[in-house]
Image (cartoon, rainbow, N blue to C red; front, top):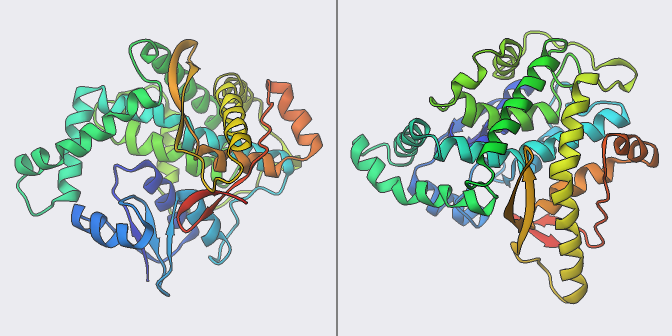
Amino acid sequence: MMILNSWPVSPYSAKVRAYLRWKGAEFEDVPPSVFGLQRRIRKAVGKAIMPTVELPDGTWLQDSSEIIDTLEKSLPGEAITPPGPRQRVVSLLLELHGDEWLPMVALHYRWNVPANKQFAMSEFARFGVPWLPGFLGRALVKPVAEKMAGYLPVLGVDKRTIGGLESFTKQLLARLDAHFAEHDFVFGGRPAMADFALYGPLWAHLWRDVGSRSLFDALPNLSAWVERMLGPPTTLGPWLADDAIPATLEPILTTLLAEQGAYVERLVDAINAWCDANPEASRVPRSLGPTSVVIGGAAGTRKFVTESLWKVQRPLDAMTPETLRWVRTFGRLQWAPRHRVVRRDFKVVLDR
């Protein structure tokens, strides 16, 4: 049987778990201990990370999107890729949003909200060292929690941006609530990659963590979507007809391009320049230094996270000239990677 190595506190694990449930896949959800992460999983994929999937033939998969892409080729059931070109592109843009932008939201609410921080540390102890009493487990996992919290400034979350970040979060949740008042999922009657990517951080951090659940109190339609995403499904409706993109998604796309899109443009430019200057390199450094960032209108500084380029390429690869022109009606999109990356042996490397 397929094994999903995951913890409930992991947003990318939540993304994959929801996908597997919706596909009706037979799998065992196994929370690895710290020893399992450091020994078995690190040995298999090169790092202590979640989620990973072990297939019955001994193959290992890592990275939520690569896991889903791989399993989509073999699992029975309805596809999660919409048939229309605009819906496909928007789904991948929202995947980029959920996987690469919403971690700012997720980490802020987990590590800057005291109740959530305590809850998360208890959960880390419960799954990481389940044989220890809670107080000992929390003491043992404290360095891990501090390391996770240490990513906040890397992603641009500090006193300059927290106000904007919280405004952005409340605005996004309200816009999703308005969308799900009219549609069961992002593109109609069945979930797409966009649903799974948005659900991951929203459920694993904001919904499940005790100190931020109140964000959903006045959002019944978004709450109902979260419940639907827990699956498995009872019935599946059709995709929205005629490749329609509901008007309720338009403000989400506008903000995505204005703020995340501006960062992505600078990220791509920085990677292009570094690769031009290092033609023999096989990998780009994980970070290429700081850059400006705006979230919720608040300006700050974050580091370039270069592995994001692999996720940036996905909507670009799906675009036709027509869909690119259409996307640009919502804002600026000038992402022009000259150097592609691929995932090979669980690493993001230059395709050279």
